Image (cartoon, rainbow, N blue to C red; front, side, top):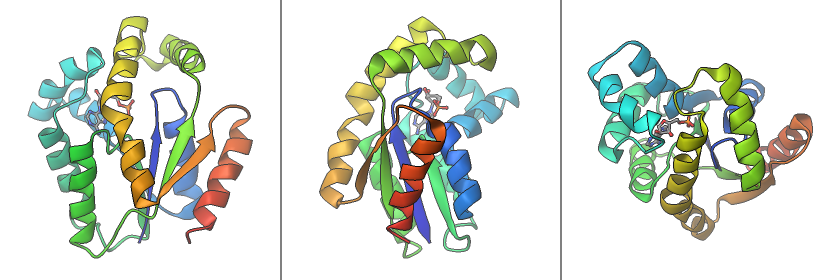
Length: 191
Ligand code: AMP
């Protein structure tokens, strides 16, 4: 299996690029944000628990997100060509949990794409998206909180994956097709 992780701040373009990666490389797109938004729309017990965390720009607790992902991947691990994980892991305990989940099926993380975009551009993009996304967290207050959470809880993962030798920096500024071309080249190199 090929397991691609896409790592980057909110607004870095993870969702857009992940959809293209899934299509081009035949991988399953797993976005924990999308799964959580569906749980909220369906008002499941997880959705009800998650909605306030999301609205405030905080992370949903690790144990809940890990259990949700385990459930989502059940029956697929080891059977599909691979996954593109978008928005997971976001903390070190989540990264450890993913590693264990993959290892149980003799799989591992193949590559971690680190999409780099400066903070002023992230805020500009998220505010622009907020005009049409209808998302509860695309407003300035929640965006600021998401960036603080990203810098404190998610950024340490860069060092984690750098040590594992899987971290691949990608320039996330500029034309979407050019960004996708760099991503494709990086994925091709591990196929
Ligand atoms: P995203 O669509 O990836 O920007 O995620 C939107 C929101 O969903 C985040 O700000 C978090 O509140 C929550 N979320 C998504 N993925 C995770 C995760 N892996 N761990 C904790 N919370 C998450």
